[in-house]
Amino acid sequence: MMLREQFNKNLEEIAGGENLTEIVYQVVQHFDNINSLPKLINNALKENPKNDELKAIKEKFKLTTSLVNILLPLEKNFINQMQQAYRVCCPDELLDDWEDELELPDSLAEILGNLDDIPQATDDEKNIVKFVARLLDTRDIPKSHGDQLKQWLDKNAKNLSDLLPQSSSHSQNDQQPNLDAQPYLLVKLESSKQYHQQRQPNYLVSAWFIPDISNYKFLENPQNCKFLETSPADGESEEDVLSLKKLRNFIQDFLSDPQNNREFCENTSIVFSLPYELLNYDIERINITNYFGLKLPMGKHYKVFIRSLKRFERLTHNNDHQKICSEKWKKLKDSRENKCHQEFVDVGKFDFDSERLFAHLKNEKMNKKTIALKLYNPPDDKILKVIDTMEIPVALWLRKNDFKTIINCQEEFDKLFECQINELPKKVEEQRLNAPNEEDKQEHIGHHLALLWEDPDLLPPQIDYTTL
Image 1 (tube, rainbow, N blue to C red):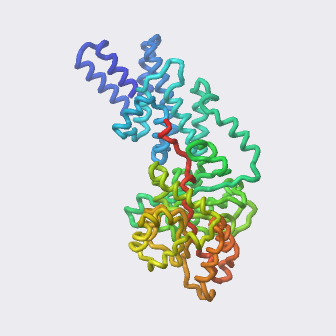
Image 2 (cartoon, rainbow, N blue to C red):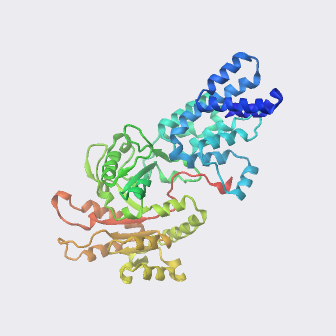
Image 3 (cartoon, rainbow, N blue to C red):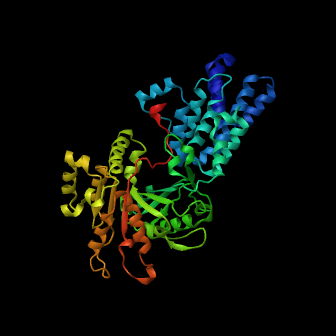
């Protein structure tokens, strides 16, 4: 491509005729198609060893192809991160043009081509080098590829320390663990395209680990959250398509992997972003083995929360929605010492009718007031969509309530709402800990509690385009 551009710029001066231009273009296209451009460039240099332009083309070709070899396998699953990094590298006037066109390059080839067209000072880092540094800043790139990119930067950057100022201090902080840290594991499960095509439940898995939530803000310090590779041992892809049965086994294996769970201490919170069809799935009952070999349901090892994938995705792409959800979350935090029964609206009062619930919550007074819901029955898709539409931050429900071994299940459930709002996660955790093992075949509400906890600030790393 670069050689073709060079011919386009200089061929008219060299040839002086349209026929020759067309012939040479066809030759270049032929070499491009058979992937022999390196050979073409080397042969041209043999014939013109003192040609500075050919030397520059060879150097640029080598630089670009070495990067493409690293990034091309990631293009499908990480194009959004590549677009983010590309946007940061663009000058203000180009960003102003985007305000009107609202378009970004949608392929790695287009991104690299555009970077090559952006003017830069001769003593500055190459745009392609800046792009790689900003791509590493997203902290989403799998470790194996991230290490290759760092090696690439080490060879091609003029001043690596200026490009990656966080690397040395970050590694020092890793050596001094904070005993009061509040770690979070974020896991996103999304329906794959195969799910829609084959009508079979297949899912993609992504995961991020935050060692200490008090030192992390998804826009300001993304380096304090790291992307966890979720590919199988054969490394076929970064996000593996899984059936529901395989998904359960995958989560069990992933959380039981010593390389992962050695970082998860007993106060780690796990937050699953789930599609509607999985929000009533007993994901916290998946048995996992901790670092010391103790096998128990996940909800006994860790605090487990769920959230809506639809809302999660909208938060990552919509600043206005982020603002609305943040206002609701602030009201929840301001009310954290209130008793749950004071703030939770009982959906049973509306006979679990989604339209009646929506009409109630849509009322301007109730819209501002309602921050939490309680559901004695598991919500269907329509109820879940109302919860998302009205940006309700917290909801607690029973996935099952027809127990034979508990005299009054609703009474046991109602007791949970006697605590303060900020104590509710702990109360849910206690119920899960007190629930008998499956082998005992005893029913307990701790087996079936689902806690929706929609913290709008608990997101993977992003770039805040509004501050560019």
